[in-house]
Length: 209
Image (cartoon, rainbow, N blue to C red; front, side, top):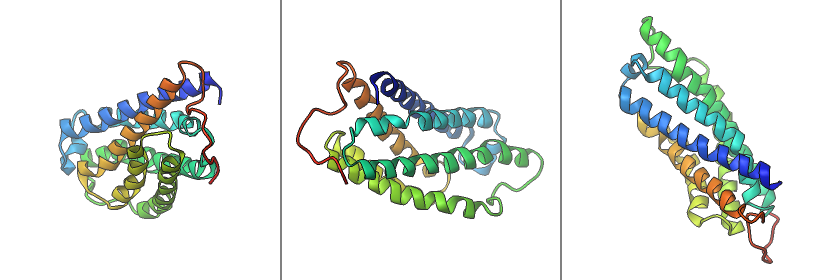
């Protein structure tokens, strides 16, 4: 990847991680953790901000491919899909229900305490892809020796926390952990780009799976 697209992706990833984190935190802090949050005056606005951050993160994910510099490339690409698919399906797709559908139901007397019919079937494939993909990504990061080891560990831990089904605001802990790890990815790309060099110093380390 050329330097300019890599830096653009990194800045997009950084911005998306920050905006999504602020949006989710603010939505729950301002409107609470109960079902009454859906009728809160700022819920839809703040949750929409979080969704915008999610979209930016998706657009900035190519920075992840760049920072790995073709090391453990197959595992990295699987991991890329392991973030992108659940980000779009769970965060953006299901997030639209949280941001727009449930507030409508709350105002018009509908039930918001139960998930919509068929939602579990919608989520299951994305959860499976997340579990497999992010474990692969964590292993790739640990094998590449480019990013800090805690980033690789975070990628491995996130899907297990996400699959645990933690209710309410605490259920976003894996998202926050993911955003912190992706922020580290974006920062690494920007730091490596000052001299136009690759994101990794040259050394005889195995680059394949």
